[in-house]
Amino acid sequence: MRRILEEVLVMCKPVSLVTMVLTLLVLLAGMCGCSQEDWDVVTSYSNDLNGQSHVHALAMELPDPLNGLHPVIVFIHGGWYATGDYRSFYSECHEAAQRGFIAISIDYHLTPYQGNTTGKVWPEQLDDAKMAVKWLRSDHAIYYKGTLYRLSQIIQTNAIGVAGESAGAHIALMMGLTNSTMDNRYYHYSPMSDVQAVCSMAGTTHFLSAYYESQGEGDPVSFIEALLEPDPVLAALVDFDDPCTFEYNCYSNTKTGACMQEIVPQGSTHPFGLLAYASPYYQFCPDPYNQCESPIYNDVPIMMMIGTDDQTVPYASQHESFFNKLDGPKEEVVYCKDQPLCVCGHSFTFHITDRNERMFRFFDDRLKNP
Image (cartoon, rainbow, N blue to C red; front, side, top):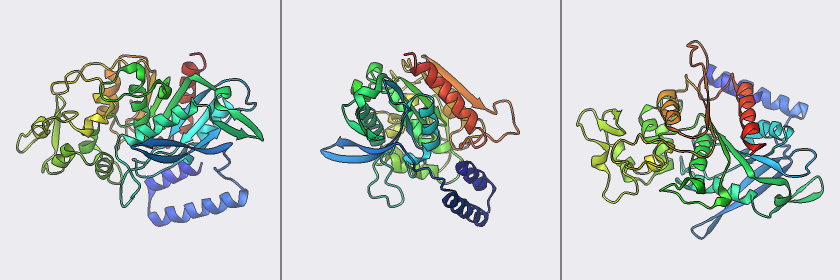
């Protein structure tokens, strides 16, 4: 309830009113003993990259009774890779546990944005999430209600789903598209980090398009730069004076006519640099220097949710084009597609209950009878 009110108030402004009401909410929460910190288990997982160990928080909500093997949903928070933590999905984790899932919410590296000296650039966020799934398939132990449980005794390892919102949704999509079974030409991960279903809630699919088209609050361009730097292609884009038009997967400067391919350094891992390397839209592109309209044969079921009023992740360029490109099991939920007078922006503010119900039905279908 508090998150809904926060989102509504941010839309309504002024800031002084927002601050006053949020302060009141915090006081009321303290008086009634309400808290989102009542997790069943809070532990950590580590990602050992480049000889360094990075530790992240991992929180769990567990079914009661906890006997036998249970399907899992891993939740990944949003925040444009600049803010947020595992606590964002407490309500969803609690409901998931009531529905018979083991629910996990994780932290991951944020970007080196606005002085964040511990921030990391892509793809470390994807590596982090992959390592969290690998941790679930390990023989680690947790304590719950005074009892020691080995993860191998409670987790159904062939039924692990992942759900995310905004930045977390982008990670979730990339997790599904980088399964070991997908033979991705750019990423190669262990089967231990594979997932069996993906739910994307307003996830970016095309960073090249998002760089120019996003009209959301804040400064999405700066977040993208922080996530993908250092990238010579991105550095060249910053110097473009005029908006670019997207035609045949090639951004052209409307003033000079310069095309993206003309500024890509020789020997680049990908012709559009990290902007495409990190984009779900460009995975499995056989000839990315030309039109990359080949379908993506996803063997992982993917559900995509978005609102047509979303100005941060625009519906037409970020959802529709990618969803149509998927050629495997897929579902979509589009809010307000035929309702012009409706609030269906990036936060799902007035649709959270319905969004969650549809998400859980999807995971019921895809994970409980794999």
